[in-house]
Length: 186
Image 1 (tube, rainbow, N blue to C red):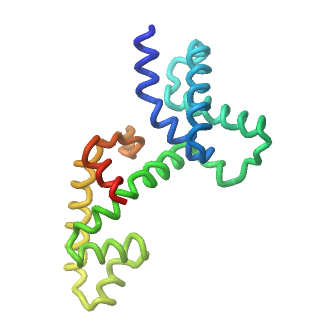
Image 2 (cartoon, rainbow, N blue to C red; image 1 turned 180 degrees about the horizontal axis):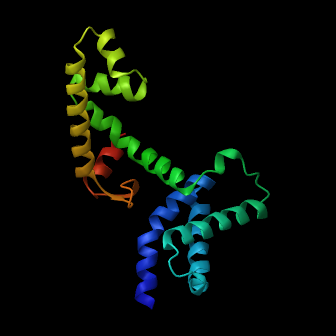
C-alpha cells in the first residue's frame, strides 16, 4: 500500500503543484496546499468510487482545499481564479515553456521566425501575411510548417510531454540539462 501511495504522490505532485501555484500565485502556499491535498487524499482514499478518475478526484480535492484556504484567509475569489483545472494546467505549462519558446524561435530562419510571429502572436492569417509580404501563399505555408516542425523537435529534445486520452497535453517534464540551460539564459 505504501508503494502505491508513493507512486500516487510522485505521479500527481508536479501537475497539482502547477495547478495550485497558478491559482494562488505563491510557491510556498502552493507547496503547503499540495501537501494538504495529499494528506486529505490518503485519509479518504476509500471514498474514491469505482470508475471515478483518480486525477479528477485529486483535482476536486485540490479545488476544495484552495477554496478553503481563500475562505480562511479572507481572499476574494475572482472570475479569473474560477477556471477548469484543464485550462489552468495548459496555461501553467505554456507559461513555464515560454522561456524556451523565445530561445527556440531565435534558432529559426528569419522568414520562419517572422511567419510564426505574425500568425501566432500578431494574429495575422497566413493569407494576410503572404499578401503583406508579397509572397506566394504556398511558400508561406511551407515556411510555417517547417518552422512548427523545427520547434516541435526542439521542444521534444527539451521536454517529455504527457497527453491524455484526447491527445491533449496535460503535463511535461523538463530534461535536466537542455531545457534548464535554455531557461537559465533568459
